[in-house]
Image (cartoon, rainbow, N blue to C red):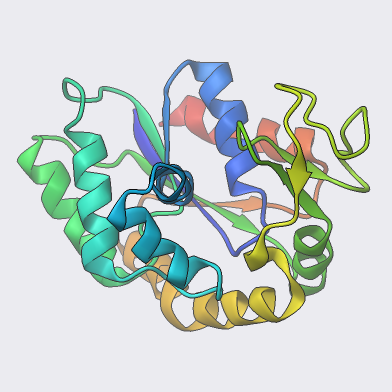
Amino acid sequence: MKFLIMGPPGAGKGSQAARIKNHLDITSISTGQMFRDAYKAGDPIGIKAMTYIEDGNLVDDKTTNNIVWQRLTSDEQLENFILDGYPRTVNQAKALDDMLDKLDTKLDGVLNILISEDVLFERMEQRRVCKDCGATYHLTFKPPIKEGVCDVCGGALYQRQDDKHESVKNRLEIYKNKTKPLLDYYDKKGILYNINGMQSFENVHEDIMLVLEDL
């Protein structure tokens, strides 16, 4: 099974991808996390990417396509995976199609989480992330047991630069202009499945699992 999880920034894609990964025991590929890991390691590709990310902009297609291709070919061919945060433009989607063609496979489905803009601002501005393991929390709906400390590894929690108000506003504008056309692209392929993201985390997960059971 190979599929994407989509939706605007703050829709809960990363948290749902992590839950699906554990539930189905499949590989979760997050371009955002790969760029952050590369940045921490001092890799030039990560340093370049963070100059875009911290301002709420999309990393250029060539850099993003390269890091995804490296990941898809770093192991033996991945039989099962979920892609989170990629593709974000139609050009990236076409590049992904080419990559999967080379690997003699294709996408089974695209999950799209639908959510209102007001809720997105509230979610993102209250999001906190572990500096060490990348676990995600929300100060109201998913707070850590101990304030400022990750439940998973004990690392310090922080607010990402791209979760601050102006950056969030910029990210949403970019999503409307560049990422939304992807929905038409995948809808025409007949593999787009919309998920109501205005529910609780658990209910969103249940709806996702119902779709995946039919793929």
